[in-house]
Length: 162
Length: 318
Image 1 (spheres, rainbow over the protein chains, first blue to last red):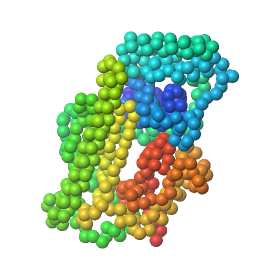
Image 2: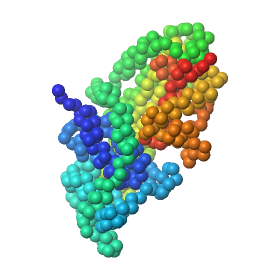
Image 3: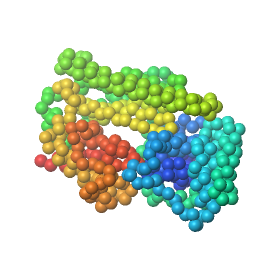
Image 4: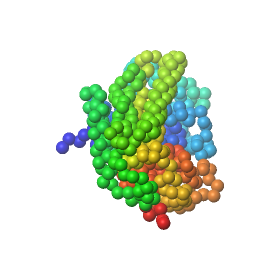
């Protein structure tokens, strides 16, 4: 009874949908946009799943799709700071509850691509730098230098705040 | 203060209750058999080169299915009964088929052409001209689409390198371009054909074109031709009822301009569905019923995707 790649992809999606949503949300910063991104990513992933040569690479492959869909979404509506229904993008204000965490999170959000992707995937999604290099299709050393660059920038940013 | 501290905030991003439905719906829209078939077809083509005959056979099979289908739409049946039945006048064939990589592009292309049955005396020059024009139009849509998609991707690529991106970072990105078609209905001299163009690089965009043709009378059929003079009232009534039903049966469905009770809002922020018009897209399905199509974002938020409303025979009233 071989579970084929389609079934594996579907169960992977079902198990990890919340992660994909958070990741998408951290880019597009609004609920409907993040839902759109997740939906597009799933359709795209399933369409292509039979082309996936190594089934063990599902994780990096699917993260790549979510990241790409998110970036595409931003490219399409990036310059508008208001969402489609005229409201300001939703903000999370929980400074009291999360204290320093909130500051760090916001500083991460201010990072520019592609550094932000590296930081989010590494620190918040717990992926290894090697996995990230596969997701972003970049050399491992490039990922490393982006990470250090980002950390350096975060450090400076947070010092100013402190 | 450490970067990891931000994870708490990240993990507290609220998960909307719609998520699981959006996910389920997206999965359902790409069911296994369909995905497998699409992939198998692609792979066969890659190995065997051009296999035009396959699609011709598929089109023929579709044709056989549909000739046994009944015209349940009365107005449509009436429309059909006024012209002499002269058998299948035309076939839809793939004239251009390409599956594979082409430089920066991964192309899956099936371009249809309507071929009139040369042996049929009922066609004549006017009939050949009519389908000829439509074929030219389809080819033009496809050619323009390919050109536009390629230009777009090339501009993106140029901008990427112009702003200091390296070959390594680019990492051999490609753009997917898809052109496909489906015969929605064929019966006697009536043909309902859907053409789809789609591109994907970092996200997918899709356009659908519909051709509803009366091949005997050389006419592009409108909603009025198929449903009669009263088509606006018939369609609007049916669509409004279906919107209401969908919203009340499933709280995750939403339409611009309609409240949670399924009733139209007096002054909506975003105008939603108000009425069909002569330009509203439609096709005829296997049961012979009209199906109204709205594009993504046209009357509902993007996650709802393309929306279809079947106009049932019961909606036609008397």
